[in-house]
Length: 223
Image 1 (cartoon, helix red, strand yellow):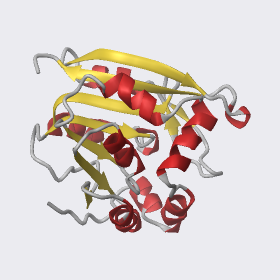
Image 2 (cartoon, helix red, strand yellow; image 1 turned 30 degrees about the vertical axis):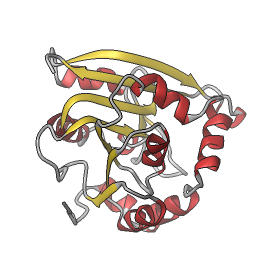
Image 3 (cartoon, one colour; image 1 turned 90 degrees about the horizontal axis):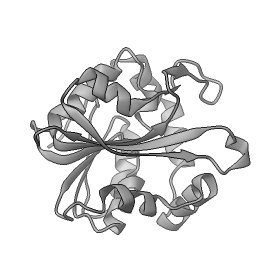
Image 4 (spheres, rainbow, N blue to C red; image 1 turned 135 degrees about the horizontal axis):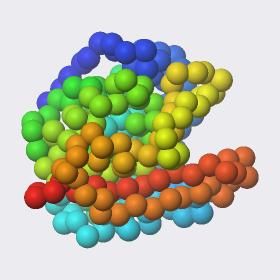
């Protein structure tokens, strides 16, 4: 299953440009370095975070990451024992890198605005630091696509503030936001999602002092 979209938003153009390519090169890490990055920033590994939120799931669960870049998060989920892993990424360069780095992971080029998968195909659809880069104007569409393709869970790890707040991203404006993304999902789909779990992760890195990220797991009611 493949998709080769033309970037059609300001943010998609940004991430498929040289800026996105440089981001991919900066953030390409071995698994050990990736875990150390989480220890340095949040005082614990991403594998430990994953296990707390998804440890109850059958390891045959199908999981999609929207905005997977080079697939590090998916490789982490492999380390957690999950076998049926998928990623979608807008940036062609990152997709090629992901195919070099990963094994037995299904990664395609595509947009979160139009996910190239059937309704309810996945048990879990999630993001890791991706919704923060979606314009608030486009966020409802991406969230709707995540809801459409998930049969049960929505999972996320994103910058947190109680209300949507614009922030600079490497001196660029209009490409990053903070927010309460679990609440935004529930507001967009009233009565359809329950909050299973939520945890806040203050940064331990002095350079990020005062900032907090949030991990959440939402479940479709009646799923």
